[in-house]
Image 1 (spheres, rainbow, N blue to C red):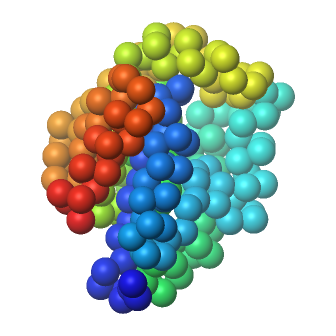
Image 2 (cartoon, rainbow, N blue to C red):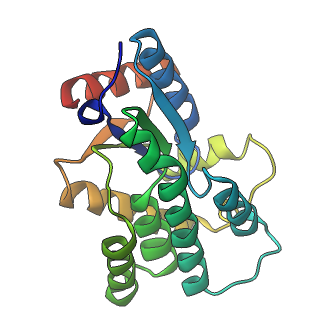
Length: 212
């Protein structure tokens, strides 16, 4: 099925650590392939060669930077990612499926690092308005209790710079996602991430089919 610019959709997946985003994204992409829909699967931070270099720096446990520096590096990576990957794909009529986008910056840098401080949130919102010309058509927030997600994440490879944070940090991140969901109900859909992967995938597909 050929795609046009007007048909191209931008979908982002959000959530705290260990919620199953990768599995859910792969399942959705297989559904799109079966439906004959062209898409680009990408991630943040990262997605473009330069942004992937910044990703390595941001996730490296040896990286020692301020919270403001971290936030600015996120937007530097995002700006390149948008220019090199996301916007060209959408203009070519392809769907974009992205593992994290601006909502993660609000949650992790605004709430996790900044404790929901209005000054930090205003900085982030200002950068979004200046450097993010396109928001997702649909954001799927995979909602899972923080403790359960951290237990899942602990079974994976060695913890990166973010995964090493304490539980209180991720509780604040969760609050950030929850408050964004309440503030943007037309764009952000909550997906219950508990249960088997197949069940979560079915919920994701239902949300996509109903919305887009």
